[in-house]
Every structure is written in structure tokens, then in C-alpha cells.
Image 1 (cartoon, one colour):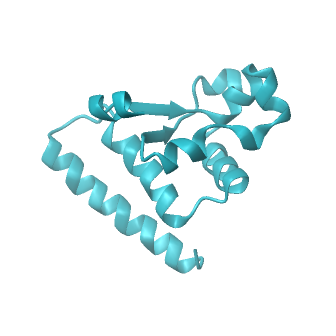
Image 2 (cartoon, rainbow, N blue to C red):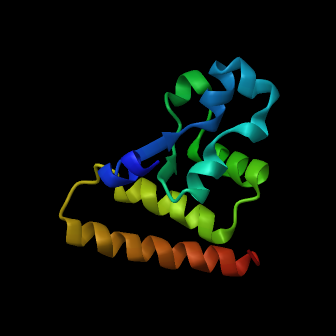
Length: 116
């Protein structure tokens, strides 16, 4: 954990793909390390791997993570934020930050509207 944190890398998690390819996890889905990654404050985000092979979408992955691990509003924001922060989004860092502020405002509005 400390080695990882010193190097500030991101961990991409595709729950669907993990469950499809790891026989153990298929029967023990709640033992996935995602909650441990979050508790350890590692930079983790969700992804779809190869969505045509896994048959999933980002919405599916978010719903699965929220349902399986009872993520808080803050947990989910951290996952979404990490995904954008580590992305190869074109443009300057300043533009990326402006975009992220818009995303956060939208995210909070959705959470407030739905009582989460």
C-alpha cells in the first residue's frame, strides 16, 4: 500500500470483467478488494475493460459497485473524480479542473434530487 501511494498510480476496476474472469470472485463477489482500496485511500476508478466482451457499461459498473458495496455519496464521488483525474482528457490541466467542477456540481445536484 505505501509503495503504491508513493507512486500515485491509479487502479482501474471493472467489476463485471473481474467476476467473469476470476472463478473465486464469481462465488464471493463481496470479497472483491474495491472496498479495501477505498478504505486505504488508493486512487481507484471504475471502467468497462472491453465492454463488447464484458457486455457492460459505465452505468452498469457504477450501479453494481453501489449495490454490492453500499458506497456512500463521497465514495462514489471519489471513484468518479479519480477516473477523470487519471484520464487522457485532451486540453490543459486548467481546463480539466474547470470541467471537473462542472461535473461535481452536476453530481451533487443529482444526489440532492434523489436524496443520496
